Length: 78
Image 1 (tube, rainbow, N blue to C red):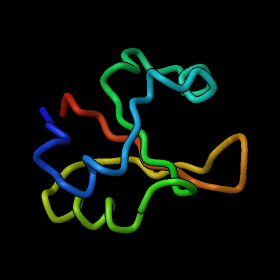
Image 2 (tube, rainbow, N blue to C red):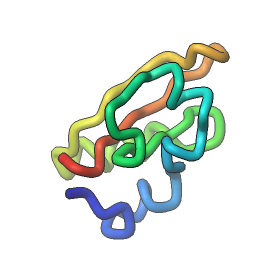
Image 3 (cartoon, one colour):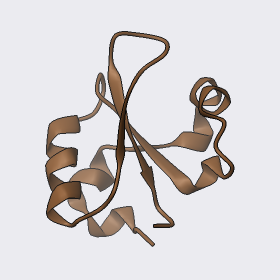
Image 4 (tube, rainbow, N blue to C red):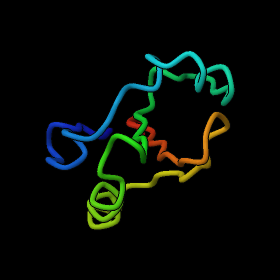
C-alpha cells in the first residue's frame, strides 16, 4: 500500500479520484476510492512522475477526456 505522506512530492501534488465525478464516471474503475489522481494543469506532474519512478511505484498516464491536458492515476493499494 502507498502512503502519500511518505512521498513528499506526491503528498503535495495529488487529489483523491473519488472526489471528481467526471473522472470516476469516465474511468469505470471498480474501486475509485483506491486511486489518487495528479492533474497536469494544477500539479507538478513531472516531479511526481520522477518520484514515482524512483520508488518503483506503478502509475498510469492518461489524456484527459475533458481537455488537452493529461493526468496520472495511482492505485494506492498496489
